[in-house]
Image (cartoon, rainbow, N blue to C red; front, top):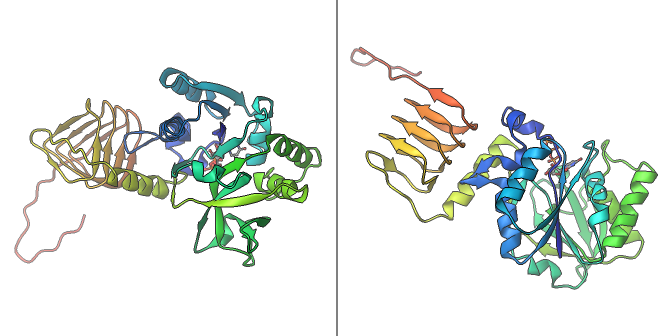
Length: 324
Ligand code: UTP
């Protein structure tokens, strides 16, 4: 099986962080989003990957080349024209072996063998409260998909496509993507993978679904922070440096410097970062950042950023109320 990971997007929703780093290299719970994905696929026995690059592609390539030794083909997507177009860009690396398409801004916690179980193509799904924001699948009684619908405004199904696609017939995917691009079939201004899957279905390909409960989006500040909280909950080693109070769960890189601070819950302090005289919770402090005299909550501090607060001097009389 070959993993196909599209990471070409600009990541506008995560600005200003994505002005200086591609989204997939942002830190969550102690390592970049892409490292969570690569570690998971390698642990599950995948040895080949296609990474569709674009925005800040050199950074992505050098990160992967330095850290991983599996066979990776990097294919640049010249313009971000949609997920369908991104996958089509990688077509020359597809052979006859099945593909596992994994969105580059999603951390997943699922046994990928579940996807192969039915022996046919299979789409990772999760029940959601508001299906209008997602691509969804409609299934028959036998559990076979009868329709793919992108962001349905009228209710057709609450089974959302989460960003994991097992494709048993890559050549038919290639043909279907070719067809939507040649005929300029776009939905919401983009070449959609969902439209190509619908074409595959119409050409006779059978699709089942597999459940994905562990699906953690990293595409927006609030989802990046909630994914950070979720991943930290799974850690159980909490170092306790001198003069600090650690409120688990936290991730503190071995080479981070922590002094006279209360760290956690849900704090990530990445490699080379420094935190002094501060209270930090529900926050990601990225590589090499320096934070001092600060109270931080629900915050994302980028690589090498400096945040310096102040202790204030007060002379407050009885029965006063101060909010600042
Ligand atoms: P998103 O649309 O969520 O990512 O695509 P984005 O475009 O980077 O983010 P925003 O919307 O500007 O904040 C989901 C995944 O598909 C990839 C993205 O890189 C991301 O990993 N993608 C999307 C591509 O590789 N190419 C595309 O043309 C579109």
